Length: 74
Image: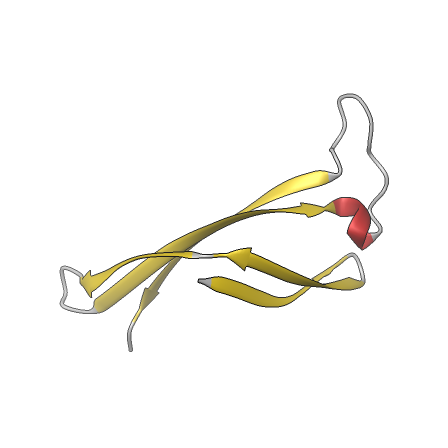
Protein backbone atom coordinates (compact mmCIF):
# COMPACT_ATOMS: atom_id res chain seq x y z
CA UNK A 1 0.00 0.00 0.00
CA UNK A 2 1.01 3.62 -0.44
CA UNK A 3 0.10 5.97 2.41
CA UNK A 4 -0.21 9.71 1.75
CA UNK A 5 -0.92 12.45 4.25
CA UNK A 6 0.59 15.39 6.07
CA UNK A 7 3.13 15.39 8.88
CA UNK A 8 3.11 18.27 11.37
CA UNK A 9 6.35 18.62 13.34
CA UNK A 10 7.78 21.62 15.11
CA UNK A 11 5.04 23.86 13.69
CA UNK A 12 5.76 22.92 10.05
CA UNK A 13 3.34 20.89 7.93
CA UNK A 14 4.69 18.85 5.01
CA UNK A 15 3.12 16.25 2.70
CA UNK A 16 4.40 12.74 3.23
CA UNK A 17 4.12 9.50 1.27
CA UNK A 18 5.47 6.11 2.31
CA UNK A 19 4.95 2.39 1.59
CA UNK A 20 2.97 0.29 4.07
CA UNK A 21 3.20 -3.50 4.14
CA UNK A 22 0.05 -5.24 5.30
CA UNK A 23 0.44 -8.59 7.02
CA UNK A 24 -2.02 -11.43 7.45
CA UNK A 25 -5.63 -11.05 8.56
CA UNK A 26 -7.44 -13.70 10.56
CA UNK A 27 -9.15 -14.71 13.79
CA UNK A 28 -7.32 -14.40 17.09
CA UNK A 29 -7.71 -16.78 20.09
CA UNK A 30 -11.04 -15.13 21.01
CA UNK A 31 -12.39 -15.26 17.45
CA UNK A 32 -11.98 -11.54 16.74
CA UNK A 33 -10.57 -10.59 13.33
CA UNK A 34 -7.10 -9.04 13.54
CA UNK A 35 -4.76 -7.58 10.94
CA UNK A 36 -1.47 -5.77 11.06
CA UNK A 37 1.30 -4.19 9.10
CA UNK A 38 4.40 -2.05 9.20
CA UNK A 39 6.15 0.88 7.54
CA UNK A 40 9.68 2.29 7.60
CA UNK A 41 10.59 5.65 6.10
CA UNK A 42 13.03 8.51 6.55
CA UNK A 43 12.33 12.20 7.15
CA UNK A 44 14.73 15.12 7.21
CA UNK A 45 14.62 17.17 10.40
CA UNK A 46 15.72 20.25 8.44
CA UNK A 47 12.48 20.04 6.39
CA UNK A 48 10.68 20.87 9.65
CA UNK A 49 13.00 23.67 10.80
CA UNK A 50 14.96 21.47 13.20
CA UNK A 51 18.54 22.46 12.41
CA UNK A 52 20.08 22.33 15.88
CA UNK A 53 22.05 19.38 17.29
CA UNK A 54 23.78 18.56 13.98
CA UNK A 55 27.41 17.52 13.84
CA UNK A 56 29.58 14.81 15.42
CA UNK A 57 27.91 12.88 18.25
CA UNK A 58 24.66 14.75 17.66
CA UNK A 59 21.31 13.89 16.08
CA UNK A 60 21.61 13.65 12.30
CA UNK A 61 19.35 15.39 9.80
CA UNK A 62 17.80 12.14 8.57
CA UNK A 63 15.64 10.25 11.06
CA UNK A 64 14.16 6.81 10.43
CA UNK A 65 10.50 6.37 11.42
CA UNK A 66 9.13 2.88 12.11
CA UNK A 67 5.41 2.15 12.42
CA UNK A 68 4.05 -1.19 13.59
CA UNK A 69 0.25 -1.49 13.54
CA UNK A 70 -2.24 -4.05 14.77
CA UNK A 71 -5.99 -3.59 14.40
CA UNK A 72 -9.07 -5.46 15.58
CA UNK A 73 -12.35 -5.46 13.62
CA UNK A 74 -15.29 -4.19 15.68
